[in-house]
Amino acid sequence: MGFALLFAAAACAKSASNQDKASAPPGDQEQIAVPGAKGGPPEGAQVTGAPAPDDPRFHLKPEEGTITVDKAEAAANSEATAAVKLAPSTGYHIATDYPIKLTLEPTQGVKLAKTEFTAGGRNKSQGDAQTLSEQALAFAVKATAEKAGAYEIKGMFKFGICEKESCHPKKQPITITVAAK
Image 1 (spheres, rainbow, N blue to C red):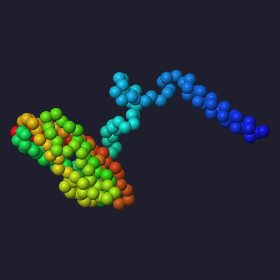
Image 2: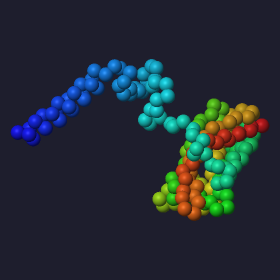
Image 3: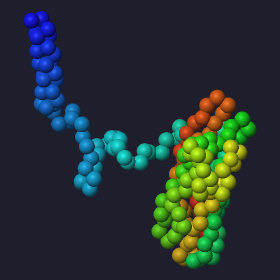
């Protein structure tokens, strides 16, 4: 008999809990953004699947290494190449087993040969990298400007950098300048 009462009390408590959720004011309920809907998510809400905002905590620190991005220069309608290079500082190394990714945003007036470059991962694949080792990583970005002028290509560079004892994922925004004459 005691067991039945305990079971009934638990069921009632669970039912009351569900009723609280059902009768909660609209502001207290979980909000789900519907793709294509007007208004979008509430201010400050993190939407699953949406790109995370840039977080400086994941940027490469000066003591960990350097990223250099060469300027791509060529005549208008000719392919130009910009090198994106990562060099770790002394005491650090590139995590070649980390899935490395360089993603570029299309820019009006510039045709990109590729918008996504990958390397590394479990099999430490060379992938799209010109150079991939614990001491150096480089990608060659090919771009063609339609007309003379200066253009900026924004991108996100994701990689891992390690010390002796630990590795740290990095997510660094980059800008590639394309100059066409």
